[in-house]
Length: 320
Image (cartoon, rainbow, N blue to C red):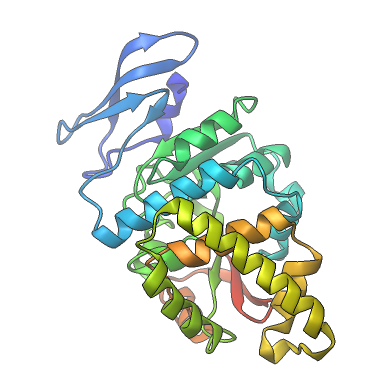
């Protein structure tokens, strides 16, 4: 952690200033504490990552965090560049040049793939937040990116001052206990006039598949990770055979658009990761466009753009 990172941070409990107490220091702070000047709460810095998680996660939240942490450790370095392309495709009208010189926050960073992409686009500073062990894998994979700063914290209590030009949260809100409460929380680090971008599973387009996946998850979420990896590979192999056999019969209303994307754009490793995700995460919400519009209006967001992606999800961009 660079020393100047503290200027962006705040206590997630009382929002007061934090003071740095370093115990091991080189060119960066490797270990130590961040002490709140208000409530006197001490937050550890371990392996160069500030750990500002407060409170205990529910059982479902813990399982979700553990599942993603394992998945990113396993698949993080194997995913294809095709997944990078879909980032901005899901957030129109954002373009790579919008990131140049900006201070950016990636909420739910996973293995840090999109944080690195934001840096490649020219972001001045990128902060990457995740509640679980994914931040450790992300930091290792991002060793050549000195402008990416990893923070372990809960997105319901983002420990940041409102200094960010852009905040994005891709595929995360629908895995939280309260998606719109989380959505409102991640607006807090955004400065006035800053840009917000999120991508969520849609209620529309998932009426059948969503119910089916929820039923399957009921039986799979408590299996061991190694078992779910094997099941994921089996599911992908079965899906590939079915897709090749039925391609000409698939129609968008029967999930055809998403299956075309899955099989013609993404790699086998990408599909295995997605299958593991489907089998593992105990919290999944499907969000309607109507509810997204209502949230945007209630929170006074401007220049909002909501687009349906692959007939089963929504990308949302707006200005605070």
